[in-house]
Image (cartoon, rainbow, N blue to C red):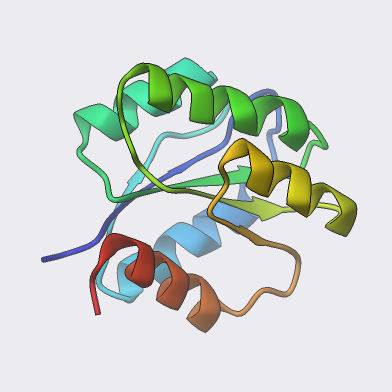
Length: 129
């Protein structure tokens, strides 16, 4: 079974170089990648994740709004009865990681995260090995 991953930029963060690299790298690792594009709402990300039947949702946030936007995405997924793991990458201060975990984030990846680690984490969450 091929791992399906939705990658999204939520809110007004328009920096997409990193998410494009991640999307290509996940694709090159054999995953099916759904990229929603820039300026998504939490509700649109959740709805697309359910509609596309993805295994994992990956959010890229560089705007500093991670403590606001990420819980909204998780709440929107829960509102759709979707138990899809959410991972977050970007500029996430270390002191915010526990708060994101408490909100339901399965994993966080900061600057310099290894693609091998990202791929392995996503594969483990999806049950693919």
